[in-house]
Length: 181
Length: 181
DNA sequence: TGCGATGTGTTGATTAATCAACAAACCATC
DNA sequence: GATGGTTTGTTGATTAATCAACACATCGCA
Picture 1 (cartoon, chains in turn brown, red, orange, green):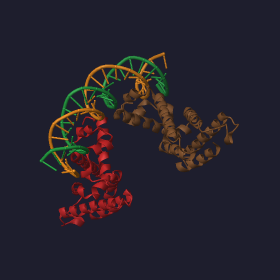
Picture 2 (tube, chains in turn blue, green, orange, brown):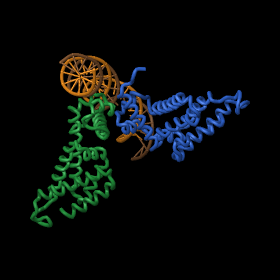
Picture 3 (cartoon, helix red, strand yellow):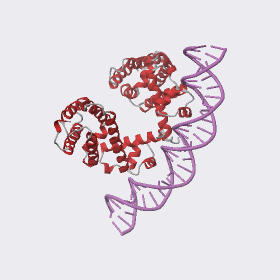
Picture 4 (tube, helix red, strand yellow):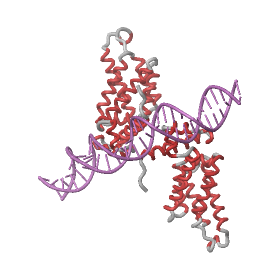
């Protein structure tokens, strides 16, 4: 893993920030490459050095966030849900512009499904249907049930402009998950 | 005036922002070039592409602000002191980090004198000792008197963490100047 | 249908920034 | 006053970003 030139990091950061900001202001289809390069204060050609087009750009942003969330999950594998959720909700708050767009606009259904997949996948190691309170239940049903629950709670949080602090959201959802897993 | 490559603008902006931030955190003498390049996220050599050393860098920042204030003054030449001052105090507020450092640390006496010079110079066209309320008074005394008054007021404002909004400061000092010029 | 305006994706030449390396200066500490 | 560690200012080679220009596609409107 050779380290990346700081110039490409800065360019990519500016470009990613620009498109997210623009998505908060207008429809994705109405955003032009020129809009993005203007906002990012970057030459239009620079965008093509890193991304195929605006769809590729958005894809890469989504994949990066999913990947970051997964990494956070794994680095928090020792924690309870309450503690682990706090790491996630802090990440949500840090990137609230991205997440509120992705969970508010209907055009972003793809992100929601990627997000749900991640949650289900990460919770898989936590659930046990061979003994305990979930004995006899279907693992898949439990995962989809609580996966949808968490995604829905996050969705609600952003739709209502984060009415509770991240810590509280993490605690509340954490209690609900710890009680059921 | 051929336009400047956006890369040099971005580099210079990052570098200037970095040193101002650092001056808010530690003594100017203790700031190294490496500190600045790290903070600016720029190669150390890049600083030398634009500035001789950190003293030259600070000089250029000061000159730029003085020049901007002068430009604002001239573009506001039609206004009363009350209106014109508002433009200045908005600029102060926009760059409050720079000005509060420059008017708080004793090491920045040079800036204070540059600032006073500017104020005196710009007020020169406003004062009239041939007739009116200032008839018979020394132009130089009036300029130094009210120049020091304005600089002092600004200094107080920053020393006390801008306890009044820019608009109010502009109005109050504007009234005092309009009454006397 | 045609036309101007705008957006797209790519090109080649140029410029700025990067990085690693260097010698010299400085500074504290032994 | 020698020593090791840090800062400084500069270097040459390399890489990334810039800019202007291009052909082509798309779209609204006459």
